Amino acid sequence: MKRIALLGPRNAAFNLLEIMIVVVIIALLISIGLPAYTAIVKRAEWSKVQSQMKSIVTSFHSYGAEHDGYFPPAWFPAGKPAGSWLDTTIFPYVYPESGYTGKDTDGNSIHYDAEKGTHLKDTVFVVKPSVLAFPKEEDFYNHSFLLNRSLVAEATATNPDFAPRKPTMYEDWTSVMLLTEGSKGDHNSVSVSDLSQLDQGMKRYQGLFVHFAFLDGHVEQVKAADVKLMKKITKGGGGDMAMDGWHAAWFGFTPERMPSATNRSRPVNY
Image (cartoon, rainbow, N blue to C red; front, side):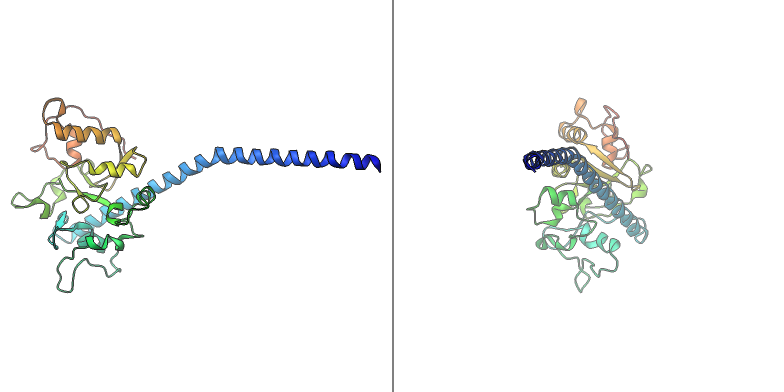
């Protein structure tokens, strides 16, 4: 009996040591696995953003099919300043059963900035990585996408921002960007002259890249270095600062409008 009594504390000590070893092993596994799991979740969210953008591009083409091939203008006359393409035209094409038309009872476009885009919440127009990166941002327009305002409008248009665009004027739909990401700026649109808005878009992805959705519906990750280059060349003008062919094509510059090319670098498609 004495021997049994003497072995009791030793067994308890060994049991405690075993438990501690198991706890350490579990902690190590968590420390190794958590970053990998987090990375998988992030990539899943990024992939979802790509799907959202493709869906919106499809809706633009659906709109065009009913409007003689024209895409909607970036802005709509609706109070001061202008309303967004997002409210007045494309939203109903993504959610036709929602009853949301972006118009009042007289058929006039409504200015929705005062609502901070709350109707966009939980729709394809809201980017979850943006919500996670800026949880205090209450304006859901800033969590959404930007329309390329530099697409060529009708030659007779007195104000291109209010003029519809016809994508069929571009031969290569794979190289012309329709949508990107960033702070809403001029009503969820961006022009080649103000690329600083894209900086906010990159912050959604730890400053690594921003998404571009092209006319043909494919999506590319445009890296920070490319965005920096675009910002530099649009400020500089000619010579080494001239916009290269690919970057000019991204924003819808036709050969007649194309600045001189300095290099032909381009990101890789998905």
